[in-house]
Amino acid sequence: MMKKNWPTHSILVIAIVATWIKTYVVYHTSFDLKIENMMQQFILFINPLSFLLFIYGISLFFKSAKARNRYIVITSIILSIVLYVNVVFYRFFTDFITIPVLFQTNNFSDLGNSAKSSINFTDIFYFTDVAILIIALKWLKIGQKISLVKPAVRRAYFVLAAAVLFLNLGLSEIERPQLLTRSFDREMLVKNLGPYNYHLYDLYIQSKSHAQRALADGSELVEVNNYVRSNQAEPNAKMFGLADGRNLIIISMESLQNFVINNDMNGHEITPFLNSLTKDKDTFYFSNFYHETGLGKTSDAEFLVENSLFPLGGGAVFFTHSGNKFHSMAESLNDKGYFTNVMHPNNKSFWNRDMMYQALSVQKFYDVNSYDVTDDNSVGWGLKDTPFFKQSVDLMADMPQPFYSRMLSLTNHYPFDLDEEDQYIPPYDSNSKTLNKYFQTVRYMDESLKSFFDDLKAKGLYDNSIIVMYGDHYGISENHNAAMAQYLGKEITPYESAKLQRVPFFIHIPHSGVGKVETEVAGQIDIRPTILHLLGVDTTKDMQLGADLFSKDHEDFAIFRNGGFVTDKLVYAGNACYDNSNGSEIGIENCQPYIDRTNQELGYSDQIINGDLLRFYDLKTGNLLIEQAEKENK
Image 1 (cartoon, rainbow, N blue to C red):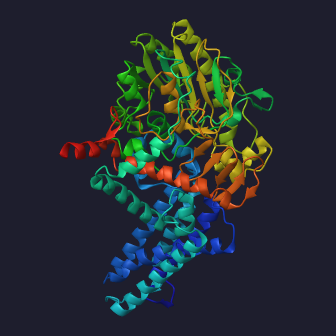
Image 2 (image 1 turned 45 degrees about the vertical axis):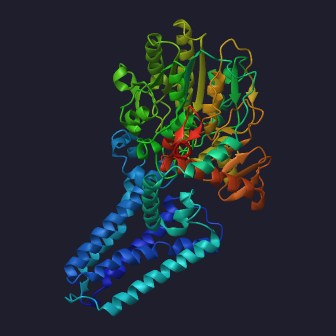
Image 3 (image 1 turned 90 degrees about the vertical axis):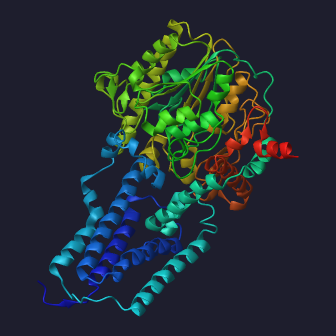
């Protein structure tokens, strides 16, 4: 034992300082938080402190020193776990976890391989403060005075904690005005509030969103409806109904980004089949098409495709609002006599799909039990793409026609594992194992898609179908910017990072002869109206935020879930405005009108989802049910 007698509350001080310093070190070693000036650096330094003062300060209400110390150690362990979970999540998603995601326990078993790939032995560092506390309790001679802390002392302590909090909020408001009212960017929240206060704020936001449904009466839909009606795009008369009566096959190409299209890796062509489609006379290829997903990733892309609404910023709609009323593409095609189904060789409960597909009016879900899955034909997340597509065509051959099949591929998924027999090209040679393997799994998926087209022809399904393919979300996160810079031969700035969110989008209409490369800026929210118009479905009464890509009224505008956007002339990313022609940073006032509109559209979409507002809307008549009720009462 050390002979020196330490003050009674030494453990409290050690806990606060150790967790504070550890958190600050983690900011710089585990997160890519862009710091632009000394004010931001100071805010980053102080932002954990107010929460730590409050949470550890609760120990001052314990009378027993033993109880105080036990509380402090347990709190330290919990905070370390919270911080570590964010670190692991950030490694995979380059984002911070939210409460809805935290409670998506149905996904945990399926996320095992990805999680293990994100955990390192050195991660024991994230529990350094816990170890320091335990050592201090064992070796320091600390006063054991058994009495409650005087109320005056406690008041002074918590006044200090409140002062630190208000200092933090004040400086953050100066540095980032309206931080708490424009909360689409979680990185900005963490950078200014700290991870612990961010989670408290997230708890408030989630509670507020759940309360919105209970309090909604439909009046909120009036403004949204007016906006949607005033921004509708007139269909292109030549394209409307071009694929009427055909089978619709939509393929979600897992983690496929557009930078691989018409490109090579060390002399090896990455996507030869998809490259050929970009030149095919029956194919429309959209080269400036962006994913608009959030934390729900693939499920968010599904939500966008079915509803032409934006996903939520804090979690997956598939989990948080599967009980809502939706007017999906599947519902529209059910009314047109289609057999609607989704094909995905995974557990039916993953991303809560079995429940959500019912809400989306999907008639049949071909899950893992619909496929012959063995150890030999599986890798990584499950059934390989080639046998998946082949077995799916066999299932399609027995479907009533016309059918709408939405297919979700699996193989090109992080951590991009692939059997040697399926490696058509060698790995890349960067310092990122993730990027090195990515090119190989992309090449495998490309070969699988080629075989799929051949199988459709062999089964007699090709000629009377329309095949739509889209990349669902990014595959290479910003954590691999150094390797991406090596491959692309240029620095990955926020502007370049935004441009890397482009994903391929193909519409293949056999024997149409109208295909070409389209360069307009667009996003996944535009898929629903575009496809329905090709199939001859009128959407003038639909509550959708996207627009038909073939319409002359379609605007070059793609919104990101974090509040960024891209137009043909501007890019807004990392809270900075860029000239889209050369990537140079320009004054924020150039982007402000689009920033306001972006926030408006994301806000309207959130209102529809959180308030379950479509239950107040009659899709058949295009009337608000509250208006109908008012008319009936007159």
